[in-house]
Image 1 (cartoon, rainbow, N blue to C red):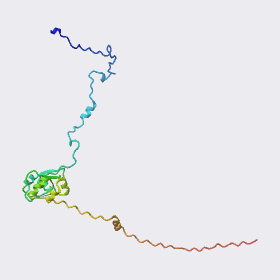
Image 2: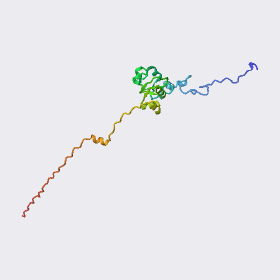
Image 3: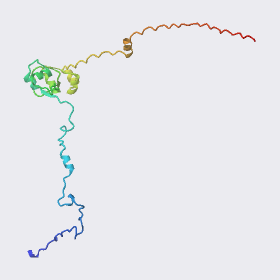
Length: 218
């Protein structure tokens, strides 16, 4: 086959005639005059502009589902080993004074001691949350830990571990004895004044019969 013998597989597309002389007359299916009847009609969707103004949700906890629980400020035992001497007392106020922990928005944050590092000195720790590994290391070095019952629950330290480390729970304040309502009402009430005896005066009224008029016979 020669090049002059080649034939097209598909013929040329016929130009579609619209309006007068074509299949669709007058407005050629474009409706009335206006933007939609012109060539190149492509309008920007309104919702696109609204959506683009919304902030992006970049994962959990950034713009939504933020945790309400306060996260503790972590202090490892190797920091205590480097800063404090043997037998020193360690409390939240002392950690703030040493500059190990700083205040958050003008208030003392919740602090927790973790067990990273080694301890060779005996410390007296009180008022701080502590992890199980840090509790074991401080106990092994001869230190003591005083912790409240609420902190024990938050630290997830079992009761057996607390007893072994001689953790002293905070004493609950003595509750004032409540008096029964009836007794308290009687005690606070004023003594009633004796009722004055009513003396009834009975006045005897003598009934005087009216005098009969004599009628004279005429």
